[in-house]
Image 1 (tube, rainbow, N blue to C red):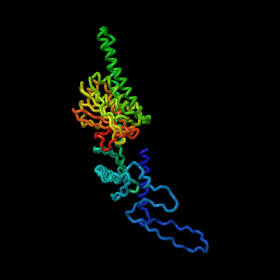
Image 2 (cartoon, one colour):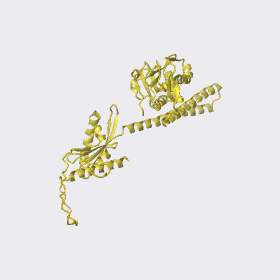
Image 3 (tube, rainbow, N blue to C red):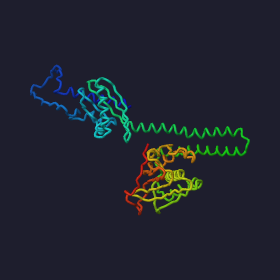
Image 4 (cartoon, rainbow, N blue to C red):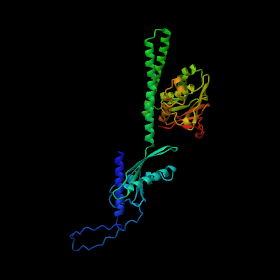
Length: 413
């Protein structure tokens, strides 16, 4: 499809260049032999007014006069998601579409322009040229530049931004590799434990091995459950919109994390919970998202520590904050913690049974509800996550929107 679009664009640009060189006044073309047409005897010869040729350097876009003959080639090429640049035989740039013009004036645009000019000059020499340009930003940008000669001796280049495609491909590749690892590890452990159990007569050893098998089975089940939950959310199904009391969401999230918190002797405290706050959304998804944040805070806190949960209203949003004093997150990892299966501390995740999908679920729930999730953390000092969800109605204790806490936003992948 992309090749077909580029071919159409190149043909259109080539036609325009041909028109440019063949327009009246530039090249004298031989006139066809006159055709004798009978005229009424009374009809006087009325001389036609001369049409002045367009000045050199003018926009070669044809102007249609009279009846509508459809869109011009330039208006069509301007609608492409590709940048299109045409260079004349003399090495001067004859045309840029809107997409190519939009890149001008930026550092990235200058680098792309330099690469495009080099590709066009190679095309003028008769060479089909294609180049992938990696610009490491930030933000990271990947563009594909393709240039080829046109029949009249000029050349056309296309510029395609494939950054999003590359990002999606990378996430997909990581996902396949990670899910294979996450399922292979416990399944392999189950096979080894089952073999050990087959020839074991000691009842104490049998019980110990059986407990390990149950634990590995639960690990597989948690991974599958989280994958199914994430899949449902990522399908883009609109969440059920109802007014949900924030106190109910917080209560459900803490109940979900209570067994883990009790096992690690961590106190989960609710602070600053104004009454009457309600958000608009799906109760199950919201409880799942906040529950994941509370569970993560418990998992990454030292035994005997504490986790605080609080809520407040800022602007048109309710902000649900979960803070811990645990190991924290290095700044270099902030951009990736919302990716599927990404873990800051892989050894701790194995000990706590985490699947690496919790924060990805939180991000997608926030996005599906028109909200956001922020993180503020320093290594060794703990982390604070903020889940922002639109209010169901105006709350009397609303604060100005500029009081919202700062932090890194979760980026969609």
